[in-house]
Length: 79
Image (cartoon, rainbow, N blue to C red; front, side, top):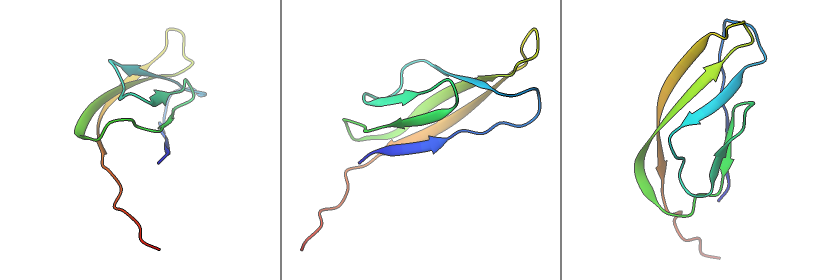
């Protein structure tokens, strides 16, 4: 099933620019405006994801965060 989460930051000068450090799971993307979305292709447990956020200061201020994403197979539904 599709997944979507809007990442948030505070402080600094917006709008913020987001970037994934390393590879995201197959089928997932992180847009520059902080939307992590997609349809994961392979079930995986606790995938570490590191994201970096840049503000509009010159030079930009930078903040990073670590997240764990688990991709599970949904339970079957009976009619």
